[in-house]
Length: 277
Image (cartoon, rainbow, N blue to C red):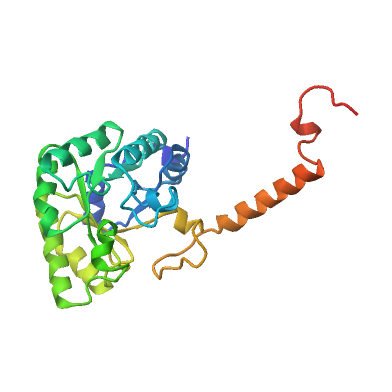
């Protein structure tokens, strides 16, 4: 049995403990059981079932169109694959904003599907809701900085924390979310110095950065992006590609097409019974 498979399951307390010890936290997105199992076996701390599925799987231009039903299905699949990593479900647009009752019902649905926590976007304005969810026993990860569900308000993917007003809002939001009981907060597309200040100001809530510099308590990337499975020309500054699977897949498909057309596939080894000559 591998060392990773013997490791205890990651919990929200693991995040808190790692922050206290200064140990970095690793998070990647996943949307299906097979990928989740691969990440789990490799030793990832947490798997985020991101609403980025809207972009990378369903072909939408933003995260806004994806529905709660679709996200619950992705979450259930990931939960079947990840047996050790913490599974965090991203609550999509309008799954929590309309009312506390709506938020509690939908968050509970994600936990029933197998998630151990949910993520909601927003700062000061969402802290009371986060506190309500936590009060009902639903662990919450916050998300501030660039919040994709509010992309129209930002006017595009713009770095946050460059103006003093923005910096103040981000600092106050992080503190409010920690006070509300969030075990962790995603800091997205944010000035690195602001992210560091926020990280150092929080006592229990671990910060998970994406485009927020190296001083966060951990990092997250979209799995498709870090594997090179994205559109041509997609090169955000914060992204590091660890593989070029798009090229590998395209080459494999071309070779398959050639082998089928030439009659090389299937061969004797891929066929059953006596072969006609």
